[in-house]
Amino acid sequence: MDRPSEKPADECGIGESGLPACRFADQPKRLAKNTVYNLLGRVLPMLAGLVAVPFLLKGLGVQRLGVLTLIWLVVGYFGVFDMGIGRATTKFVAALPPGGGGKRLAELIWGSLLLLVILGVVGGGVAAALTPWLVGTALNIPEELKAEARRAFFFLAASMPFVLGTSGARGALEGQHRFGIVNAIRIPGTAFTFCGPLLVIPFSHDLSYIAAVLVCGRGIVFLLSTYFCISSVPGARRPRMMRGETARRLLGFGGWLTVTNIVGALMAFGFVDRFVISSMLDISAVAYYAVPFDAVSKMLVAPAGFVGVLFPVFSAYAVTQAVRISRLHRQALRVILLFVGPAALVLIAFGEPIMVVWLGKDFARESARVLQLVVPGALFCSISLLLASLVQAIGRPDLTAKRHLCELPIYIGVVWLFTKQWGIVGTAAGWLLWQVADQVILFVLLRRLLPDSRRELGVSAKLMAAGGGGALVCAAVLATIPDMAVRGAGTLAALGLFLLLFWRLGLEAEDRARVRSLLRMPVGSPGQSSGGRDR
Image 1 (cartoon, rainbow, N blue to C red):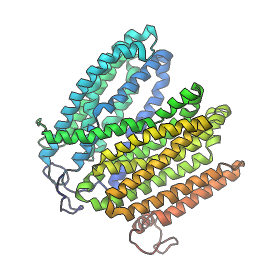
Image 2: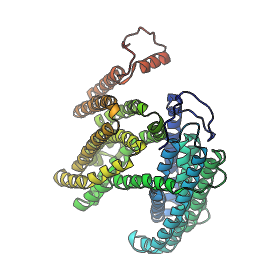
Image 3: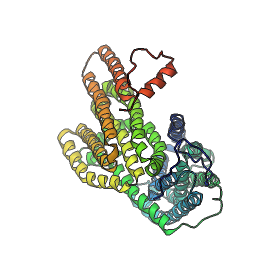
Image 4: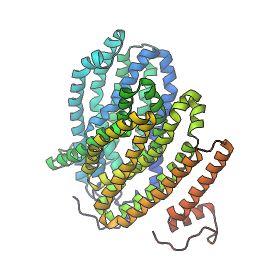
């Protein structure tokens, strides 16, 4: 591990790597800007998809669009096979000492790129070998579409080196806090996944041509990402061989992340839930559960983007300024709680009428309770994303992976039992219970990893329990009020109380002073708290 730098965090200069030699990435303006970049990088392609899908349905028909959605799924899932090296690259690039590490940075960049391209070639060969079975048997593709679908999947196999190589280049750029470049490439690249097929439809409906165009798009994204990644570091334009020690660090760290990504996704994204529901109930029950679940999961877009910005900062502090990690974590928790908490309160209080307006009374009757249980789970999940990212940045991705391996069999049993007893409402309750337990486990892990920061972590836990828990309890009570006017007034009052408590208990003295300066409030105005030290 690199020796901690003795240089103060606020001193800036240009180091050997050509990057600023200070750790300024935790300044509010920079964090906010990078978070906006990440948020746009996720939201804008989603909007492009919403616009493109109706035209694709009209041009391709239901069956071909169904196969195209499988193609999108396969392309997106390819990222799992990067063995966590992309995230590991972010960790180790960010952890390099400020003002130095130019040669090691170049080695990390080239090593990550070469490792991932090689993995992509191997993975692409495996995908090509599995294509006849996938198209012929596993995916139940209509007979008249199998020939073009087979050719399309062969093209997708050829794109795997581009997909995985892009993960390495993106990881290196994020480790240098270059989120503007990352998302300037990601937005058009991901949007092209939805809009690229529209360029083919006027000439042909053959899915293999559509897949070929998507592969070209992936190749361009890879080349752009690689160019900016290499050109960002002086001296990195010449390929460098990676030492065995560096390869072991990348593969060791990334391997545990792969376990987390695969096993955690089975629980976090509802794969286990839907399998249990389909096996115990019926396919309509899957729809009643999946629709509100998938809609609520969009609440995690902003927290995930924010945590992605924080990960390289946490990684840097784990080496150079470990004492500041807990304070930054507490600040980040407040930000997430401030934005997700009120949204959760409103969605729980008005879950049923929202579902009625959106999907009709019959559908809402079956799925409103699911939404009201999944929403608090999403709040806890957003905080767990932050806690797990901190554990990984400290250098213990094995702990986050092992926790998921231990949780999975218990989770399957609980979901099976709850679903058998209470149907899809029980499934949602099981998911919520897991999110609460998972967050408690992460807090316990952090207390052991950061023994000098237990007081800070205790404050964070109390803030989550008081702020998040209080909002959820208020929302649950409000949801039982039949009169919509009274419920609305109560919700406004609860939101006001949440913000008041957040102002008094959640913000530090300097934060309140900063808000007052923004609002041009006099220093002696009501609500000013005495004392300016962190709690």
